[in-house]
Image (cartoon, rainbow, N blue to C red):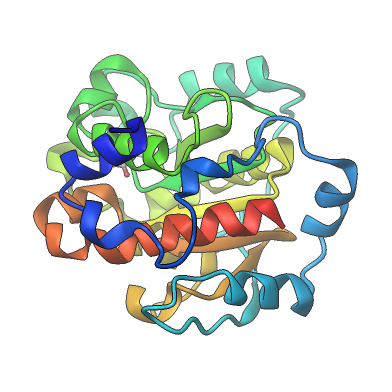
Length: 265
Ligand code: URA
């Protein structure tokens, strides 16, 4: 059994996730680390043909509607941070006292992975494990995310940069408050501008609502190509939600298939 088939079986998805009449997705790996120049050029321009390509490669089982939306990142800060580079970002966040979360955190969680990756994944906020280790998505939800990325042929360290909307853990894993999101907004904007990803994936309702300044349900936001700070963005389920609702994993697989198609351009 191939590695991807094994991972899919472990996730309980093997009968559902392989697109009919197509080779397994592992059979056509996408080079996420080194984009062709023309792909990078196209990716920054939101064009209907690119959206059409995405639609045409979606799984046959569920017709895909792709729309292009341009939305500003919510809660932009008026200040311009003197952040020159990644070390400077880490230093600023480590010293940050902008909101109440600074009083209860053990560690700030800035991000991990390849800072020049073509794929930027954005979650909600650190949980307990992330707060302890200072790294995003290292708990149970992170393990499921790793499995889904592996099944899609995406290497989480080489091909992806992963971060959260909020850089410190909200106590008890409560939702981040609007003031906390606003406090972190300029850090996230800097990360998006610096990674310059070909594609952003927003994990879950919270990240999607913050990035898109929308209150629409996930079912509406999925399968549309949105744009944030000039970068294409897709929405999928948060892995923590998938742990609670494993029946939704098949839809998540469709989303990751779209991610792969979008990156393949
Ligand atoms: N959930 C998130 O949204 N982010 C993490 O880093 C961990 C869990």
